[in-house]
Image (cartoon, rainbow, N blue to C red; front, side, top):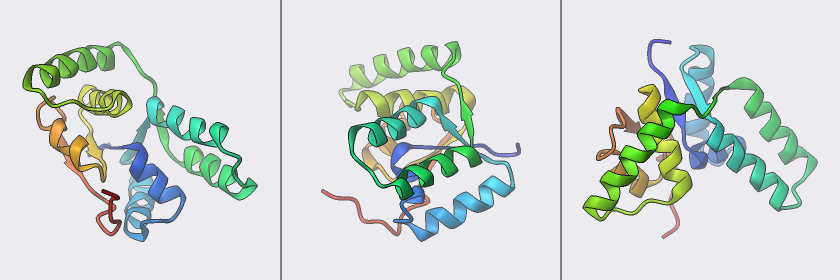
Length: 145
């Protein structure tokens, strides 16, 4: 892989639900180029969403088809080390981050991937925790305030 993009849960959701045509196009290109991956943490969040709600068969199928197209990276010791360092850094500078977001960002830092997110808080915090870079493939989606 020449450049690896690791998708945050919100970007994955926009792609699956086709809420961001721009992100979906970028994702399909990245799949062809073998440039995109997903943290096992994001897979867990997607599967949790399916288990928590009664979703349609079509939505279940869309999630499974999405997961089948993308490399899912296992959570390993390097990610745990990156998480510990990142959490201490963010606590020290007073920038809290949701636990799952921090786990995903730490995973991106551990594998040297560009973190793809539409979460502006996550993108801002990532600057402080060794995430190589962030990108927003879904800037055609308005975030709820």
